Image (cartoon, one colour):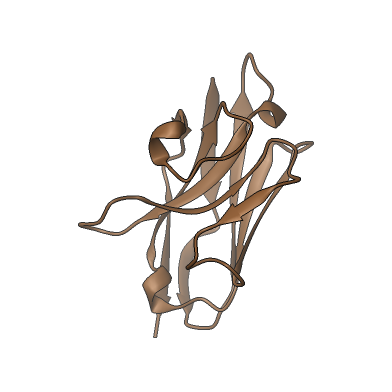
Length: 126
């Protein structure tokens, strides 16, 4: 089982940068055996994939909207995954969730993730 706690959200201006963190506490399997993903959701819309990282950190995947601006990384020694977001736009405003998957490779599909954090709000003003 994995418990996930996101932090780092807030109100920023367009063009700013924000780093989200997701701290994990795992029992049974170790944190470094989970692929991790970041998703986001706005009211009235389905949760969408933003970025994913393999258990080792050697492979990363991004939604088209995140490519070139966001970077996902993980520190397995600290049981933490990060999402560095640069050049933020108002359309990036959402609740951001981290999620853990028991697969080796992170999926873009939310149903592939078994554990979810409570989310952190990121609001980008124009």
